Picture 1 (cartoon, rainbow, N blue to C red):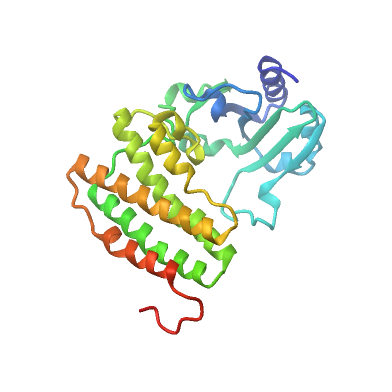
Picture 2: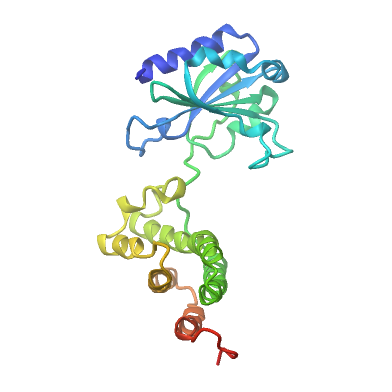
Length: 290
C-alpha cells in the first residue's frame, strides 16, 4: 500500500505537470486534528482548474493515479441523480493497493468562494499565490454549536411529530417505511439533541464528526449504551423496543438541554409517548384507535 508521502507526491506531480491546474487543496480526515489515523482514510483532493471541460473529454488521464478496483463519477450518474447546478466534477477512485482518492475538479474562478466555506483544509499547491490574499477557512463543518430556544423547540417538535408516523407504519406492518422514517428524520433529531449534549460536556469545542462518528468519544458510557439500544433489527417487537428506547433517550436529553440553557421544556414527549405505547398494544384490525 502506497504511503501518504507517496500518494501526495503523486497528486502534486500531476498538478505540477498540468498547467491548467492552478490550486490544490486537501480536506477531510487527513487534515483534521481530531481524526484518528488509519489505513482507510481517503485522500480528499480538490484541483482548482482552468477549462474544466478539457479534463472531461477523455477520462483516461486519471489512470495515472494507479490501477483501480472501482471508479465512480457521481456527476454524470442518473441513479442517484447528479445535481444539475453543480459546476464541479468528481472522480472517486478505489485502488488495488487499498488507497482511495476522492478527486474533485472545480473551476478556479470559484476558488475564492469555496475557500471561505467552513472546511478543514490544507493548501498543497498555489501556483498563483491566490490564498495569500484570502482568509482561508479551516473550521470543522461538523463542530457543534450551541442551540437557541427556537432550534431546541423545533427539534423536539419534529422528533415527536414524525414519531407518530413510525408507530402507524409499525402497526400496519410496513417494515421498510417504518425503518426509513426511524433512521431518517427521527434519528436526525435524536442526533441533533445528542450533539448538544456533547457540546455541553465539551464547552462546544469539539466535532461530532460526519454521521456522528465521534459520538462515543464524548458521551458517558451509559448514554452510549442507551444509544446503541436504539438500533433495531428487522423484528417488529425489537423495533418497537428500540423505538421506545429512542424516545426515552430523546426526552432525557431534552430535559438536560432545557435546564442547561433555561429553555421552556415542551410537553410533546409527555403527550406523545403514551400515544405511541398505546399504538404498540393496539390489536390488529382495530376499527378505532381509542
